[in-house]
Length: 335
Image (cartoon, rainbow, N blue to C red; front, side, top):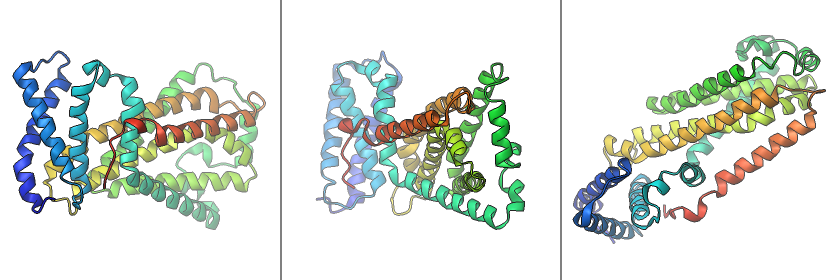
């Protein structure tokens, strides 16, 4: 057992820094060769870091500290034991199926907080519209949502699929760009110690809650489900993950009780932030395509039941992916 955590860190940190430099060298340069002496040194540093990680058992070390050391050991293990080297490690499939869902689960508390903030915003938006329906224009920033839901549904069904052929690609591109900006803003707003992220998540929730209540009150729940579910079950979680990244960044900036300098805390999370926002980008590409080429087609062109089933199937697959993918490869946490 470690009696003096600060002394332990002072003794071991130079080795961790050296191991991280070597890892960065081989990760950045696929053709890099450490040579016999370099490989021997790399293996020694890996073993020493692994021993240090084992010595943390039973000690209430800050979670960020344990995550950092576990991540370092896991990266070194991958370099030593991977059969296909850098090409395997950098394979997009491995990143998507393992790294992204593992990173999401590692910061699940921040995601849960982002979800809670959004739900509270949705409840507030629904209550505000219920109490002051004449203020709908202030709650909903998009002009096409200001009118009567019943009239909009009638118009959408009358013109379903007409005049869309020339606009699908540009509309899809606009949706991807817009939603990516919102998600990146949620993450970047973590630089305000999380205040900006919380405001953006709450505001998005307000809009969502007001829209849902408006259509349900008008008896257009089926249309709403068929319109929102196909793309919304991917788009909304993607924005939430953007908020999750913002809250991770905010936690690193605040660093309460971690005992690390700001520079070290940011280094601990920067790769996770890049992974989360990269996953968000892929999710929004898919959501944009689905919204432009599928969600905008209503009855009689496309039955609402088909769209609803498609959206529910997407949601089930997304939940399964985020909860289970890469789990057999994941480093066990001992927080």
